[in-house]
Figure 1 (cartoon, rainbow, N blue to C red):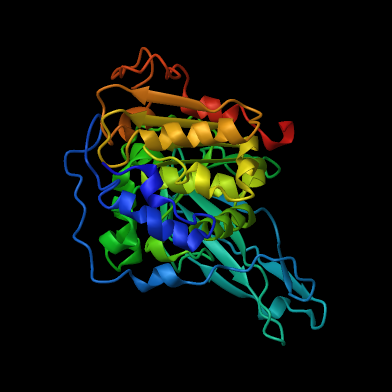
Figure 2 (cartoon, rainbow, N blue to C red; figure 1 turned 90 degrees about the vertical axis):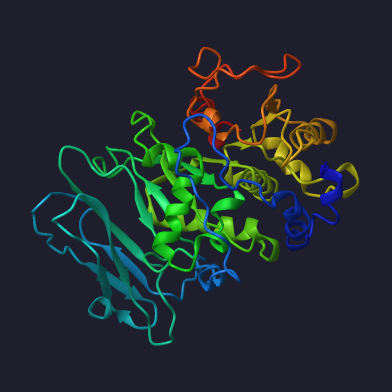
Length: 404
């Protein structure tokens, strides 16, 4: 049985950390099905090497006074009915050296008025010193009775360095001043690009089959009353990449592209995604309002804690695990929370729910809430730990960075 201590040498060096704990993730999150998972969940065989689109450089969102600035004319979100024609509202661009660059703006328009969908209109400009503006996006929501409930954003269709799955609430954009909580779901290893092939659009289908909010949304089982913008980036080659930094670049992209309330950014994930969510909370605790880890944990032990470990004490954490998990041992979640409590002074006591008699594949019942007390698939829990007695989504929303 793999233990957490076997996989945590020098974990403060994140690239080495990912290399060491990837042993835990071989087969982790590869799509075993329980609960409400579809019967046809299949993971394609691995290709010989990770698709090259994983290696795309992260976009630069730094505050550089020398770069040009693009400003939209009109609203950032436009609603249209099916069959209606899109009318371009345009944008302006200014630059400290070159002055007015409006005539040089390049507009990429993907709007199709014949199909329900959330479409991007992208605005970009480059000045004479080859400095790029931070790209500005207008979202065009083509609707019938309601907007579309989810979209795929493959690499190349946005400024993001990662392909991702997107959900916008039905009322997104109706109030131009409204900001929304952001929920980032990190998938299991089975949805990595190594396994999903080198077609960026089709690769996202693997992510949709994996677990969590993307699976619920693609199956029509998401609660539309939940207010989250949901984004699920697709990872790959995690053993060789500084994943937390790449996740942070994705967070910056999300803030730049969507109407996100920066005080309400939440992370969750299953298996590999549970590890990555916790790692991000350790490295960037002031960006995360709360975290839920399912069948994951923090890949660390007492001898290898970095100096900045206790930043995580500011992040409310709720971990879920099955006590018969033979992919990531339940000790992973137990030890993770013990490390926080023993070494730090958490402002919110970490929660841990252990399901008795359950294996690695508890993700469906956790995310669709059926494992809760009184739920349709209520799972037995170890009474020595916390019960699953509250919606994980309402628990997340109870935390806000502004309240710290």
